[in-house]
Every structure is written in structure tokens, then in C-alpha cells.
Amino acid sequence: MKVIFLEDVPNVAKAGEVKNVADGFSRNYLIPKKLAVLATKAELKKWEAQQQANTRREARLEEEAESVAKALNDTTVVLKARAGEQDRIYGSITNADVAEALEKATGHAIDKRKIELNEPIRVVGSRQVTVKLARNVTADITVVVEKEQEE
Image (cartoon, rainbow, N blue to C red; front, side, top):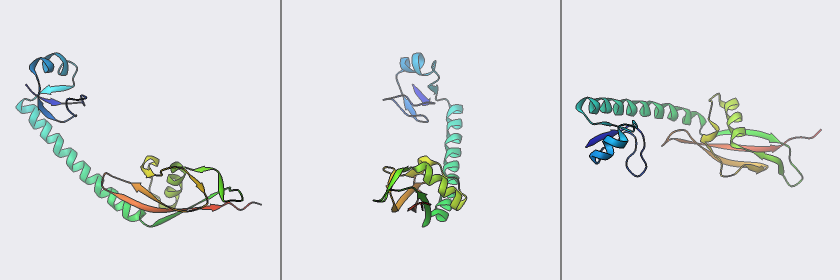
């Protein structure tokens, strides 16, 4: 029986896929739990329209991400932090701190989860950081951590 999956079913199919499955599996499990629908002509048309809408939406989001990436590329963000004698910071600079400083510097709100830091910054200095805006769109920024002047 041919069905269209509405949700991911582990080891069977992902949401949006059209697959042939056993009749009993679809009648007794997939359809009653609303994990899939029978692949009729009407459902297939609706599925195709939804796929086209998803493609258009992803293209639009990618275009927006590219314009933001152009604005962010080669941006330098300066953060000040208290540091000890060997330039080690008290605490650390996280991707949330970088996102906040980036928003102040450029005016673009960037989600902290899109900033790729392998580990928090714990020393004074300069570092290249990648911001992943979309699946294929990234921007490289420079984060400079300076020692805060003590009074």
C-alpha cells in the first residue's frame, strides 16, 4: 500500500516521503496514529503543492541569509572582560555573548545557536568565528577579546 508519511517513523521513512509499506502496517499502525495517509491522487497533489511551497520558502530564507552574510563577513566584534596577569579571563565568553555583541554592532539579530564556537573563549586575543546562517550560507567574523581596564 502506498502512503505519504506525515511524521518521521524510525527505520521506515522520514516525514514527506512517499513509500510502499505492508497493508497491515499502514492500516493498523500508521494511519490510525496519523503518522501517514493513504496516497490518493488528491493527497499526492496536496503533497506536491506542499513540497513546492517548502522549496520556495527555503530559497527565500537562503536569499535572506546570503544578504545577512554579506553584511556580517569581515565584521569585527570587540568584547571586554576582566582578565588576570597571564591574560586568562575570569569566566568565559560564550556564543551568547558573541551574539549579543554582534547584534549591537550590526543590528542583525543572530541566534546564539548559529554561532559556532568549539569551546568558550577563555583568553584575551583575537579569534575567527563562523556563523552558520542557513544550510549552505556561512559568515566569518572576528572576535577580539580585550582586557578590561581596572581602576
